[in-house]
Image (cartoon, rainbow, N blue to C red; front, side):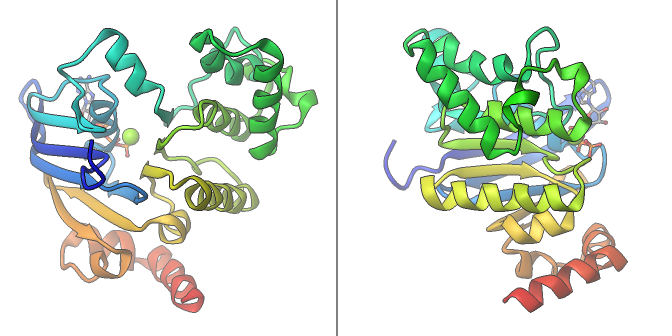
Length: 260
Ligand SMILES: Nc1ncnc2c1ncn2[C@@H]1O[C@H](COP(=O)(O)OP(=O)(O)OP(=O)(O)O)[C@@H](O)[C@H]1O
Ligand SMILES: [Mg+2]
């Protein structure tokens, strides 16, 4: 993979479930170091597109390359090696319910079978500390944690293998404003320190404007706009007007303008 190869390249992708066409000829690239936010109405196919990037779901047509490899054409060791280069935070948190928070974060490191347990312990506690989970909570089972804590543990797990690429599906949904701000600061730090590439789905306009280097908008089965936040909000489309320029959007934009 050369320096100019995009981290992700989606070409002419179609997705159909029964009679319903979710994506129609979608093409999208994500370059190294970008924080790309995917926005779109509920059911517009954001999570499905993420799952296709992870190789968890196969598009009806078209290709998805990650780190230069066609994700739907590889398997076994090659696919596993690629998986170790990214982290994923699912929309529903998705922790192993039978494992403590600590063991959930340690699990991807244990699966590598190359790291000694004391190093795994230190790394897992460090990741949990980064997301604001104290050691006393690390020993709890997921069922005994709050929704926001489950989300933060899931983020710690996504970061366990120090990924080059991070997928986030609604990372701040269900977090209180302070936690959301902490989350934004954490992603920004990781992005700067490790040149992390991020693909994120979010409805949260504060998070969206605080982090995105680029926004892609899914509507009418297409990517109807892709560009910087300033470019995208100027595109005339009913979804964009409703999403960005309703009351919520105006307030977030004011904050953006004050910051720049
Ligand atoms: N495995 C599947 N089988 C059938 N239909 C599916 C499947 N997965 C997704 N869909 C449908 O595809 C559409 C897109 O779903 P998706 O979960 O990608 O939406 P989304 O943009 O993530 O929505 P939200 O913002 O509500 O999370 C929906 O209509 C959904 O019902
Ligand atoms: Mg979704």
